[in-house]
Length: 130
Image (tube, rainbow, N blue to C red; front, side, top):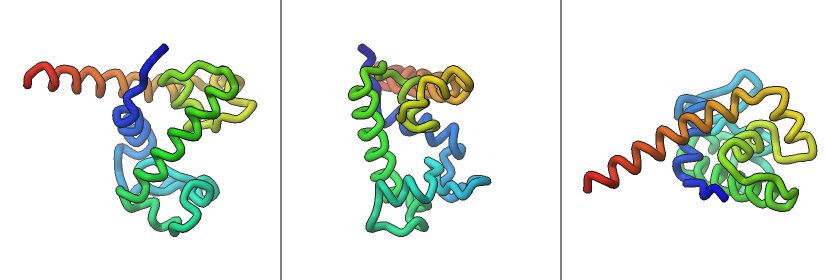
């Protein structure tokens, strides 16, 4: 059972999605460092404007909510809860097509997993110096 460092995971997602750029805008209307789509944002943050996806603090609330939702969905489906599956759920959604989407394009989860591993290792090194 892998224990995921949520902060390191969300950092890795944002790095892949936008280079951790709060003002990033995607080709399909995605916004902010986590590149939220309007519909996803509306589901997660019904009382916040989509313009708030550019606000780091507000977007972080949405990112933590989506993380929790994806975690619950993977658990409910009996799927592995590891960095690659969580990254795939973030990018493709945690619906019934998740495994098929992973099989077709494993690049995104692999990129997130590599950045996540580096971030966790860097944190462990920092912790060892104190």
